Length: 368
Image (cartoon, rainbow, N blue to C red; front, top):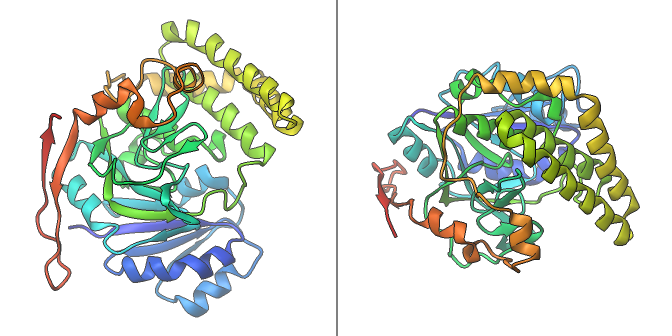
């Protein structure tokens, strides 16, 4: 099994490095560990050099943001696999090998993610990724274990290896060359949704993506930007609209774009009624800025169109907003879409011998 490059992007996050680097170093000993630093002004680099001299440091001269920061880091990496890991994530024993065993056996798998649980409530799925991500027809993301703002308790209900539409950026296993060939993360996003945009391009290029729940990561979430932050609201709404515009066909956009923007306007009004005017204004700014820079997104759309579309069974044809707020579907397992996914899960058998060497894993398509 080829060693992977575990890459942690850092910006003034010495407190997270102090808290979570021990688990990364302990449970990733067979692999390369890199911290890509976005011109931190705190003691991050001094802490790493003093306490973890074996950890490689890519010290950037400016803050590139999340998307371009990872692009800069992967430009320097030649490992077969790169694992993009948030600095506020705690990894566990055997978190890498099962995923790489799956990817080693099937070259059409471009990216994977582990099961992501909440660090502060470890029996619940975490918002960013849960047990694998999907999109509805208007590019609203949801997950096995999380529909919009509702996360489920982990009771083993999603412990099967399953095909997904997108893998979380909190812990993103990717073939390094595929990442580069498809242009990596779109730097225009800065942060949020950039991994979903890339995964959409992977789907259109004919690749597959999976969640492997035998790998477990605990994620703090909101470590660099809390959920209540209007800046985060702005980026999420703006980037989801950009992503839809970039990746959908021109014909589909004729109805999807007005529908998406209409729902976003309703969301803005909801924020105002909830006493969150800053978030409401953030949504309105997101729509304004998307329209103002339309020519910039048109260029990106042309680049994506050249990749070619792939008919995929891992995108929901309906609306997750409608399913939750009109039909009352709070849990992934209650969706009709969930049955389609359950029909294409994989059985797996992964183990290690006494010396820690991974045995060959057998994966079988299973119709349930």
